[in-house]
Length: 320
Length: 278
Image 1: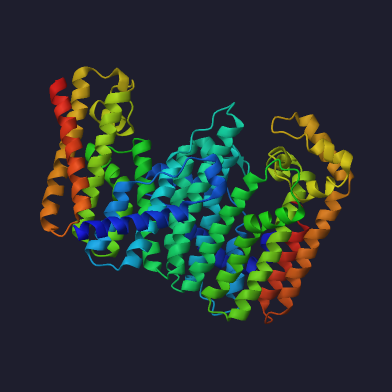
Image 2: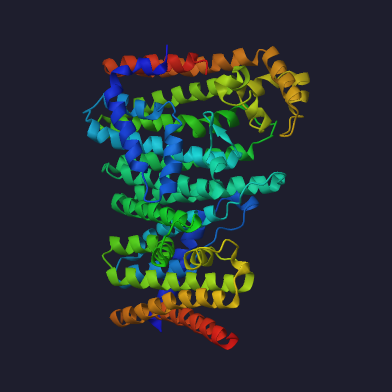
């Protein structure tokens, strides 16, 4: 089953969001419009807008208000992808050429900055100051997380705490903010929007751990890039941390460098898998998932709650 | 004299507050200190000070607008990726991207904490305008010199202009736009004369000599003269507008007045240089 089936009853509202996304990034410059739309049309799970909408269902849900938050968050995510592709010097994203590959770094920087600006312009339609405090804190933390990721590259002495803090900033905070902001924008009580924040945070942690596992277990077709890419780039993820508990494997992993031959990295992937690191990582992902589901128990019963539960389970078990 | 010192002290205080925001130990290890455009800083502080905005808001608005300006200027420093770049080059490029994102995040965070939603909106709209016009210049999308020059002006002055709009300071907006435009044109002309490279002159070349496919270095003496005269015509026009605005702003602080005289002096020396060179 596809994830989109879980929330198919939101399709009408998701269509509104897709349309708004397209309208928002249209620019006067033909090239800027083309570059922005190129990214938009490459697809994506739109998971952040979905979380915004579902969280909004716990309050006074008006799509006209919810769409501003949902679109803003997706645009912030998109802007970060454009910048990330310059950072990673990536030529492909979702199987399509990246903006920096299709044009160049300069165009990618202008496009990323443009999309970020449009997202904030749209967000200011939300007049509740709390929403802006939440989102701006999230953006700064997200960026700190990316800086930390560069700092920690090829640092084989880092520990579990480093990793968890990094994925919190890199992934979990934006999902947590999506849930919380959906609730804030629909006027939910503090208790409800805080719970939704925690739900999003735990789901985000589980999601990223699963993502890091898939980098070892996924096929090139599923991932849109060869497996082991994170490790090759020096990103020490949870499966690697666990695998390095075995000293002989650790010795092999600490020799990883960017220009390694494909056969060598494949051998390391095989070794990582052989240590049980994948299973231990998935167990950690499940632990976060359970916490997310526990938080949901404390929320008022409605259809959105059931959907959030199903999405959380889906994310935890996804194969790509 | 007391007033002059008073403004200089305010400016120093704002600069310190800005530097504090920009300070990031890890970024500082790998990338150069972020570029601070002193003229934009002075223009923002002067306009806010002159219309009676209190000291704390003057600092907040100037620092946040400058953070955004610095974010955009930092992203201008991102180099094109080349195969075989060293690890240091790679890290520098990566952190330059992130530094720009970090500074623009700080602008949002500071204004959000102060509940200044309208200014967040106006400055974001300024960033949008700047990037739209940067692309017009970079991709040579302008189909008339007027459009190219308008784009240069927008890139330089959109953010200061948005703060002026926010404070309903129309004359200041006009003054700032012209001052920053003149300064950029002086820089571009100097670059063109000294290195033979300038993105603005490249754009002017395309519009003035559309059939010419070679670069700026292949221009004849007459063609170079023509481009410089176009640039100077726009500068002269902007300078007249600056002089007109000065008469409408009698309360302008002496520090800014000194700076304006210096910019006008640079313009004059460029004109003299060109006349002498024939």
